[in-house]
Length: 81
Image (cartoon, rainbow, N blue to C red; front, top):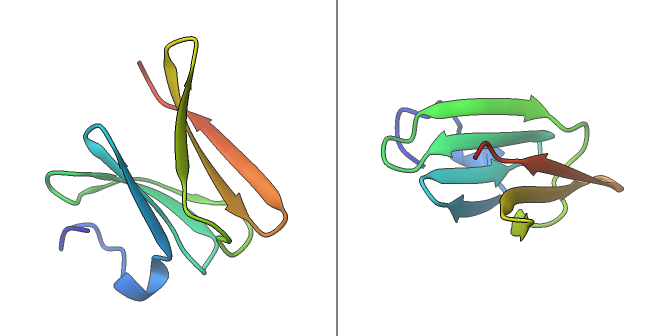
């Protein structure tokens, strides 16, 4: 992660890159989207539980999705086209 992201290394537990984005989840219960080139924090959401697995990416009908498990829940986000 870039130095401009504001996301401390100890907050991150799992990372994954998709296109020009980096996704990361951490033990603090947050899921982040960062610019892969600059490290700029683009989005941060509270997913309510400690990340229990690395993020995963998949496509449905040509639309890219990112999923992350936290606690006993699975969160899925559709990326903008």
